[in-house]
Image (tube, rainbow, N blue to C red; front, side, top):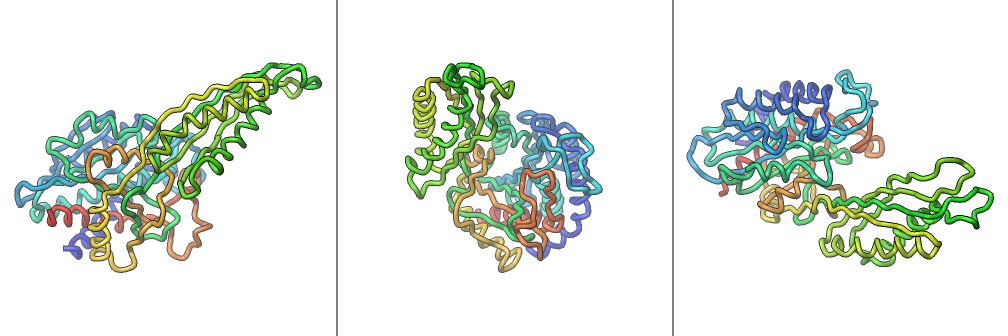
Length: 399
């Protein structure tokens, strides 16, 4: 069976490459994935799948019914949206849309899942049960995301999905390596907004005003002290200020500064505790210096939790299907956020990463995700297709 999957993955790989390059050259932002969704729908329809469009926005769901009758339903999910970045890769199929780029690999996820649909369509007579292919919009639209809309529109029902798998390219690992872990895989992703208010004054007379920039500077440092002195040392927590806006002229002390940032956690108890601690610290620093501050805290994606029973199955499947040395266990969760977490909160689910760093390239030379020069190795595509197809076949067979 695994040799058949490998044969079909290689057979369909030229199309996977073609689809990925087409999607890459015409990227679409969150909630705008019309062309990408149309391509996906055409491909799935041509394979004879039952296809639903406009699921939770531009989402597409394809259903492949196995030839051996009813059974469990496994879902495979890919995201489709791009990022607001100006591409700087120099690739011949680089983005033709100014300031929009597939810098997180969603183009590769979509193409590989279409390739998986091709492989499993040729093997449907051997499947007992069904496979749902979920192509999701708006993964990058934190805190709303695209998964909740698809769930609301019934992506996990009719027929009822029993478990889900998702794959994300990961540049720190070599091409052909599948990486996962049991339990927490990726972090909760929250956002915050801080408004600092002071009193404007001439730059030569700071004592006549209340410097909002000085207050903001104290808050930035104080938030790091909150992590290092009020969080358990072994709890992964990140509080990062990413934007600071304030001031109009070199010799005017500003009366207002606005900041925006992110909070990343794994432990729900820590996530619940942080907004109160942050507000107390922020307001305290501001008032101690004669000003004031306001915190707006927005909960985003919850942590992505892998089902332990699926992890056990996947570790065996990858070793058997891809070969020894192609599976790695992640020691600690990553604090990147993923709205696949909404699916994983409702069904047993597993997120895995796929190495996309060319063989022989040192890790420090590989461009990271969300970078304008990110260019994953296309050699990883057959590995990703083989992984997803093998997981689907093995899950249905073992159930």
